[in-house]
Structures are given as structure tokens and as C-alpha cells.
Length: 200
Image (cartoon, rainbow, N blue to C red; front, top):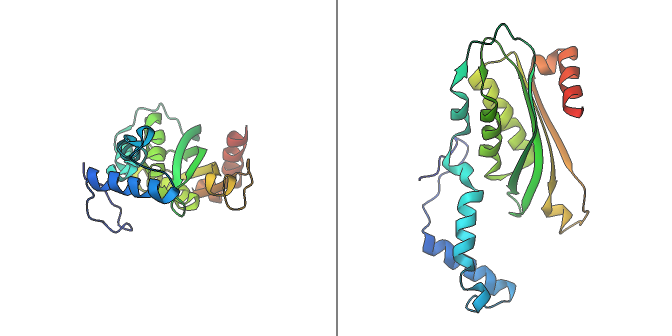
């Protein structure tokens, strides 16, 4: 499957399985080990396969998950909040894991989307090389642009391995980011309700 690139993402030439495995062998040698020894012979193939899975976000357009909606909502017009969406991403600066959870909410107008689709949007953006700030706004803007709700709120809390296992080396530190749009940003009561539900 060919990667789906956003307007901001320059396309790159396709890389073969063999090229990917050769790159892993080079990194093994650079780290100081022998890629030909028994325990490492199959490692390049395994790493390439795992990268295909970990970076599936390049093969999808997360906004597409939001296209199918439901209008029979019985007049429901309060916040829809999906909390604790676990995700794994990778820091685009060091290619080390970012592990966290996202809280996503929107204030519907006349339609809602299946809740699993919100989790798929998070996963779609997470499974790319990312910075957390960009990922937070990408999720919020996708929901706002496709669903056209009265407002959107996204909060992400994550631990970045690039600072918990190297560099400044502070295990347990986490980063929180938020993106509030429309009524969730502008109306104090709606904003407070969203933040209360997320914290609670």
C-alpha cells in the first residue's frame, strides 16, 4: 500500500524491504554488534516488519474515518467525550517511543460519529513520526473540519522516551498538550465541563 501524504508532508521515494533490512544491519554494526551472529540474523526482517506496523499512519488518511456519521441522536446536544485513548507514537527528532493517552471531545451540531472512529483518528496521526503539539492540533482540526461541530477539545498526556531514557534522563516526566476549538474554547462553561470530564 502506498503512503498517504498530507499536504504538508513531502513525498519520498519508495523503499524496498531489502533496503530497509540493509539499513537495520548497518545500524547493528554501528552500535557495535555483528548482524551475522545467530541472535541477530533475523532481526533486520523483524524490525522492518515492526516498522511497517508502527508507522501505519502513513498508509491512511485519518479524516476519512469521520465521514460516516449518524443523525438519529434523539436531540442530543451535549459534549461527547472519549477518554483515555492509549496510543504509541514516535518522536520525529530521535525516533524513540512516545507513549500516552488522548482525551477527545466535540459538541455536535446535528450528527455524531461512531466512537471507535475517534480512536482511529488518534491512532492514524499517532502512527507517524510526530511531535505531540502537532498531533494534538491535527486531531482537533480533523474533527472540526469534517464533523463541523460547535466545538472540539483534545488533551494529550504522554511520556517521551527521548527525555526519559536519554538526554536529560528524567523517568516519569510527562508532557500535556491541548487544543480547544469553537465553543469548547470560547464558552467558559463548556470549557470547564470538558476539562472537568477529562480530569475526572
